[in-house]
Length: 441
Ligand code: NAD
Ligand code: SF4
Image 1 (cartoon, rainbow, N blue to C red):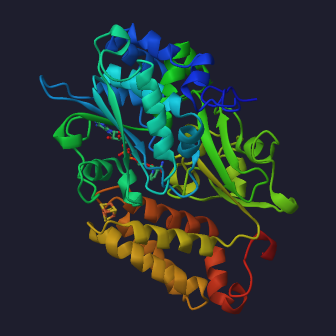
Image 2: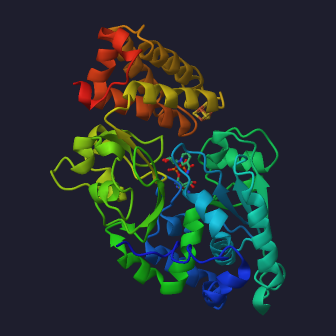
């Protein structure tokens, strides 16, 4: 059974409220941290090996150590709660049921980074959650854990919640900062990174909800102990939101030592595939990461079992591996149509493109049109090669990762399921009437 750090108290009634959270030991990590120096906290976070839980997996301690500290310029912590990656809903769970873990993590992180004004930028569609967060902030303030001179340390910290307008692109950190400044959420060119020039051109750390929440157990048990959980550079625990063709969709906390097979079939997690269907493929890290067929999902290229961690999922590189990403684990059974699935994603990325770069603006729409044609039985064989060519021209040629995110699912679908695309071209009458899966081979 995986160790639980973030969700260990999730089952306790009333844990959403300060009083219950405090009774369970809540805010003791904050009390401990406020007696440490910011540098000591930073060392704990570095020692923990925590990697960003939003998708990129960038080492959190390293990101914090890049924060510029020019004299007299305010610094900010911004929590990215614009969780919009299809298949990803683990931050929603944390904020809805355990808001004080996030607020406590923000207090510790703000103290470490020297942020007196910190923000939570939350996706517009999570319309009921800002009230939960604002209530938790008020409770923490009333108990002296936010506001002025927190616990008599002389440290002041306010947290504000900002609702997004429902654009996926505002989850990209620089688009998020533009939006927070009241502008249209267009991504900025990096560098400069937000750690140097972020919100209102001030040094800013932008971190995912789960990353900041993880700071609480890190301070609680110490960075070195946290690093002992997991394996290699995949330290600590990770929240996974599981969905698709599984018996038990939901949010699970794993310690990154379990295999993909165990995660899908064990009753502790997804509980297998409904109606005894066969596993066809999986997208393990949210819609932006490459789809992997069952044979490569259960084993790596070296014949080893594939584990639910950063390194193992990526084993084999881009050709056969995938990514941990945001932890949005989407399972496809044998009846699912990869062409239809890829078309749906292409439509999504086309809709969400901000339009600044030509390869993304034009390429995502073009890919969607071709995929729709193939899915509707009007495709030609050369369309498959054209699709391949378009995605190659998008990848790496855009301002922000949305371009790559649109290209990778198409590339992986053609690489692993080319015969399925060809079947749609050769037998179009069948793909209009039935889905195509392994059973039809
Ligand atoms: P990135 O690799 O560009 O950056 C990762 C983080 O490290 C950023 O905060 C960046 O500022 C920082 N960083 C990197 N190099 C730095 C340097 N030299 N100095 C200072 N800071 C530095 O990736 P990203 O754009 O933050 O994220 C892309 C990922 O987001 C994708 O892989 C995807 O999985 C994920 N994603 C998640 C969601 C979601 O809903 N959770 C939605 C869309 C995409
Ligand atoms: Fe906008 Fe797409 Fe360019 Fe990102 S890659 S800046 S979403 S056009």
